[in-house]
Image 1: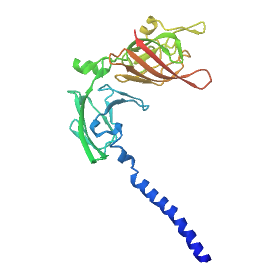
Image 2: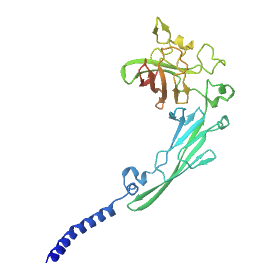
Image 3: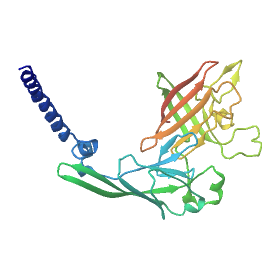
Image 4: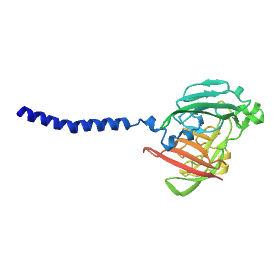
Length: 296
């Protein structure tokens, strides 16, 4: 009798247990992987498949600016989409890596260089697996800046002026009521092996205020146009076409506390500038600030 009761008890336990097992199996069979879902999510609709990529002009400190025109003769090609297959063609060369970093020479300046990305992406949709393929082509132009040594022996169509050069009125974003101007001047290549007594190369003035000015009675004064044209010292910048960097070098006085700057020209008409800065103020920590301005 006890045995019978125990069998009945176990039998009664089996029923809900089997129901749970069936339910779990049902849920497992209905669950999709991320790849399976990619075909029905709006952001991964096969009908929206399109190939695109970026062309960056890179700098030494991992800063980069997107531009189809470069003056540093280095370029980085990169895409963002999750392609399942891809192949690059830059000029006559082909590459199968996700990112392509290339250096160029003056001999590559004769014509814009075609850059093509061929790509495929697989989608698992409710109607089955779909593979989409397409390509995109952009053209890379190589130029030299008009103040460079090379500009003197190249034809005019290979020489370009930097949009970074000029004056901009703006603010630090952490102090939006204080508007002031900055000026970026390209003084040209070093006029002598020693550099002489005057500034050379491209430099940024009045960032922060009074940087590149003169000291009077122990006070830093904002640089005047005369100061700038007389080539007083200010932080040197490393130019690209639509961007620049600075490590604060070439500043022998305490009016300039700039440690680092990454600048970029914004908007299609190139009238805006954004500069991510780091300043050393006294013996304290480095202070990060952002300058935004409009061309004046």
